[in-house]
Image: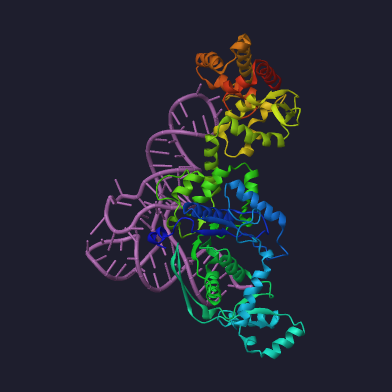
Length: 512
RNA sequence: GGCGCUAUCAUCUAGUGGCUUAGGAUACUAGGUUUUCAUCCUAGAAACCGGGGUUCGACUCCCCGUAGCGCCA
C-alpha cells in the first residue's frame, strides 16, 4: 500500500486484531505481530482487538489463554475488545461463536457454494500421495460434488462421517499486500477446499474470515506464513459477499539457522524472558526493531515513541534472525536507565528467590524497609540494598544476574582459592604484608569517616607509593569479594562497613 | 513435489538510479579512563548471492539462475 492510501485512513476507522491460539505460551512471533497490530491501531487512533482462536478443543487450554493475556499486558500491549473485557462484537473466543459460524456454513451449502464430502481419510491421503508423485499439486478430485441430494440425505442419515467442502472457482487471485505489493495465486491449484468439520466447526481459514468480517476488521496484519492462506480467505470472502480487508504480511522471526524461530532454537516464551530478567521495554523495543526501523539511526524507542514513529511501509520484507546478544545489550541499556529505587524493586525478587535475603514483614504482613540476610541473620535496610544493586547497575545485562554478582554481600565467610589473592606472581608473604598494612591503615579510620571518598584517597595514596597499584588493590578487592571480577574495592568496602571489611581482611590471612 | 515469499557486513539494518571511498547499531579486535570486571571514549576489521539486460550511469529497475525460508487444510 502506498503512503497516499494510508492517508485516506480516517481516525477511528482502523480495526485490527491479534488472534492467538491458546495452545501454548505467548511466544516472540505472536508478541511481535501483536505489537505491530497495536502500533498500527494506535498510530491511526483505531481499535486493537484480542481474539482467542480456540477451535482446537484438544489443545486449547484456559491457562494458556491466561498466560497469553498476562504476557501481552506485561509487554504494554493493550486491547479495547477481548475475551477478558468484552466488546461490541463478541464473543471473542471462537469456541463461543459456533452459532455464528453455523449460519454462514449453512448459507454456503444452501447457495450451492459448498457441499458435503464423504470421502475417507485414507482415500484422500492416497490420492494426495499419487498426485505428488506425478508432480501435480495435491488437490481434491471433486468426487462428492456430484452426489445427488438423495444420496447426501441417505449418507447423512446413516451418520456417515463427512466434511464440508468449498466449490473453489478457478481464477487468478491477485491481492495487494501492504508490505510486499502484488501477490498472485492461481486457485485452480487448490482443488475444492475443506472448510468445516461439521455445521458448527469451521476450519481455520473460514472461521478467520467470518470473525474478521463480524468484528469489522479492516487490516489483517499477520506473519508471512499466512500468505498461502490469503487467496483462500479471499475466495471465502467473495463467496460470502464480505468486503476484503487490507493485508500486511510480516516477515518471520528466524532462529540462528534461518528457519522459523521455534522452541527447537531455544526460543522461549515471553513469560520466561520476563523471569530471566528482561525488561518489558527492552523486549518491545528489540522486537519492534526486528524487521522494522524508522529509517533514521535511532534505535531506542519507548512505546509512545514507537507509536509515533511506526509506519507499515517501513517494515522489512525479509526475515530477521532473533539475535539474543543484541537483546542483552539493549536490556543492559534499559537497566542502566532505571532509577536505583526501581532497579532495586526489580532485583529483590531474584535475591529472595536465591535465598540470599528475605523480607522482614511489617505488621500487616507487607514487606517493609528491612530485609534479613539469611546466612548471617543480619538486618539490611532497603537503602543499603539499593546501594549494593546500584553498584552493579552498569554490569547487569539481565536482572537474574544480580544474585551471582552480589552474593558476597550476603555471606558470612567467603570461600575462594588463595591463588585468587595473588597479583601477578608476587609471593604469599608479600601479599600477607600488604594486606596487613592495609588493615592497619583502615583500622585507624574512624567509623564516621568511613566514606568512599576517604577510603579512596587514603588507599590510592598508599597504592601510588608502592608504584604498582594492583599490588594493593587486587588482593584488597579479592579479600572483600572473593571474586576475580567485581565492583571496585572502595565502593565495596564502603557498603560493607568498617567492621566487616576488617573481618574479611582477617579471613584472607587464614586462607594464605 | 507443487505453489508462494525473500536475498546489503557474523547479526539487526540505512540506502527507492548519480549525494556512497555503501552509513549506523550489536558482536569482535586494539588502545585509553584509578587493580579486575563492567560502563564510557577513540580507532579498526567487516557486506551489496551469480549472470544477463535497461541506462551516459545500477546496491538500487527488469529477466534468468542460485540459495534460503514458508505453506500444502
